[in-house]
Length: 593
Image 1 (cartoon, rainbow, N blue to C red):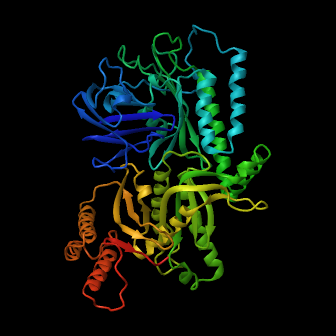
Image 2 (cartoon, rainbow, N blue to C red):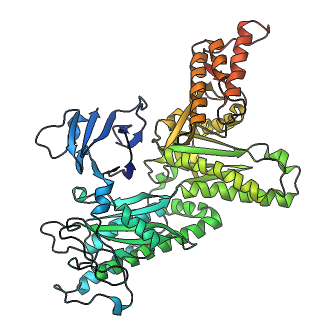
């Protein structure tokens, strides 16, 4: 099993790869955003990197980025080469590290618990003096400055990582979030990436089991375990691995939702070969300050959905730069979600029950957006609109929007279970997602400001959401979003369609979390063959392919495509004299909004 990590100023990712080739694609040379893709990646990429394990080595094949690579080899990397594991190389400003997960687990240094009872602290004569008053003053001044960033969770993470490095002299620090049962980098500050860009996943697993500050102490000759007993390991093992300090981050329910992870490399010329007790204590104080910020922001979000906070931030900038009120043009990912036929359902319920039910639904949808770092733009009737990559930069905004959309759909059965005694029909949700350029800023007025987007892409996203009803699928995304997704998702092409009020036709997709399901894969394969035949004008073949799909399969829109196939067959056979002229072959018109 390979452990692959890559880092640049715009993104930081680490994941494990089990078998076969791993393909990374860079879409957009200007931003250099890398994503793991399937072996048959989209054509809209400018660089590809294929990593294939071969015994104790790894074969690296490159396309579109050969001249940028630096891998500390005497010969220039020309398209492909073979590197010994562990391997490290750089493409442009992105550093890659490849290691065997088993080797990293085997070389993990033992962690110590931060004891608050001084009687439990290992006694020994220190070979150096403690921090000076000037050093302590710098530490606590850094904590005070951190409060300045407490109004923005992402900036709080960024500044916390920087603070951990600058204040106590670590070589690097990361803030990680625990989301969807895995660890993700929320922010990182790595001034010396050549010293390492990965985190110790085994240590993070220990943190989940023992949620308190853990660290590699300076007493490397005979470290102690959690019980205080000496813990020996073979000479040299762990001696060249970084010294790590980890402290948990919690939410308002006291659940571990993240961690501050700092490391000090053990290398020649570095006199401090571990983490001191006072340094570990300070990291714990830093984690406490970040936790306070998380809890406060959660509580503010429950009160006003962060609307007041954004408006206050916008007003505060006007004195310095009045032009900021005009906004800016940014690429964002937009999500529109709407309950289907809720008006008919609400007509059968009492008014107070409708408001309570709708409030519960909006709470669930809002939680899905905010748990994936999105911004709720507005609520409208029985739906909401959300946005990513504004006001703060989010390199993976398309993926975050799709994950939020899937989370919304997962919450619908839970809502039905809670309200089964009141509602006698299933709830259906439609979610549309699109990525594109919009104008973001004050979408309200000078007297009542509201931060949000404006532009044609906002209307387009609304039409994509409306198309979910016509197509019969709960979630639809456009090609502009699909090409930005990693292989954590499986995207299935539905059709090329024209939408009301949109001049150009669009490629529409639906997505699912990446997994292997033989029945589903077979149905989608038959649908893809039918769609291809339909677009080529072979309607009989298209209809025949659809018969291979089980009629009870609600995941694949076979009925939708079959209706259009039969409609085209009817036009060709001149069944109705008043039929409209057929559109361009293979393009489906969705006239219903």
